[in-house]
Length: 241
Image 1 (cartoon, rainbow, N blue to C red):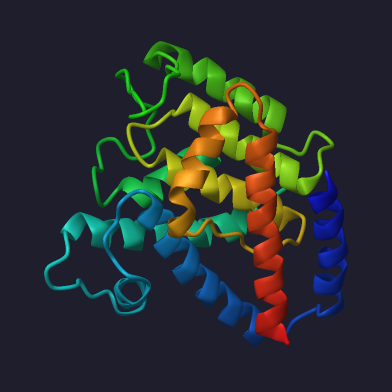
Image 2: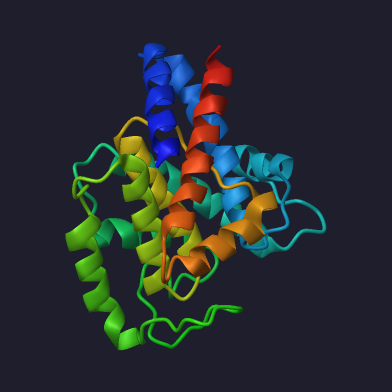
């Protein structure tokens, strides 16, 4: 896949700008926390703008006329983002790590279901593929972590794509699966020193279509994620230059 070669070449340019100062690292982390929280939530219908997301996270203020749920999603995702950076220092992630990512995100929305696998059937609107029954979820998640909790020798972008795809196809939680999938995708990228990668809300339809096609052929989805990673690298280089 040609784009993976380009990504590897860009990553070498990224590495020439490192190490960064502690102040630069903190500023970048703040930048990406806002960007990933806004975009990941917006993909799922959250109505907060990027500026409103920043206000919610940095000032703890709600926005007049906006649903309280949207505020809690912003605050929750920001907390999960902070945990993501801690997890990326580990060699592998566990089921408990995944549950904690979800718990931090979802506890303000529904504390009783936060961090717990679903116990009911769920369906993805517009998809022709069914999701595992609730009784299948625990075994599928164990297999997921066993096979992908540590890189099985894949290119980082392919590992990130596979983590995202497989997690969404299991859909272990009642809600918030897309948000956790994109965090896990970034776990793989951060572990390999790639910049935080954001899927722009404007590409939501392309994203959904690529995921749907990945049930039978994941090439389009891998290319979609690779394009997003490439854009993240270019943005990183722009920010630091």
